[in-house]
Image (cartoon, rainbow, N blue to C red):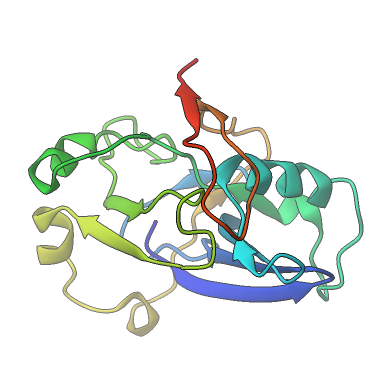
Length: 182
């Protein structure tokens, strides 16, 4: 996804999402306007692991938000693609077709890589690896072009993700999490 990061605070959480209303480089068909990619808990002082992010997302859909003109159905969780230890040279092979590309043959622009939250719960260290073709193809920033819009359709199904069996966010290093793929 290639949009602008949006930060919103409500109650005990700070939400980090990407606004996908406007097409930036890739045409998307998404289930909601905002792609939720991280949630910070003010109570614990750490970012939520993916399992807890999904729980908060599900709660968002059931409760009113303190954001003007927004509700929980305006968000969808960014899919978790892979879990594990990777060498840098292995990462490009993870960039495949986008679940949310408007065309079936749309490649992802790239991937965001994060450290395990169970080991580093208070840090927000991440990196984004993008395809060379994607970065080379950006000739003019989207804000300087005539606006084109992504398709926002609640009927678009959420991307499936690996099932996570991990400890909740903690302020000290705990046992190593277990992962399984479904």
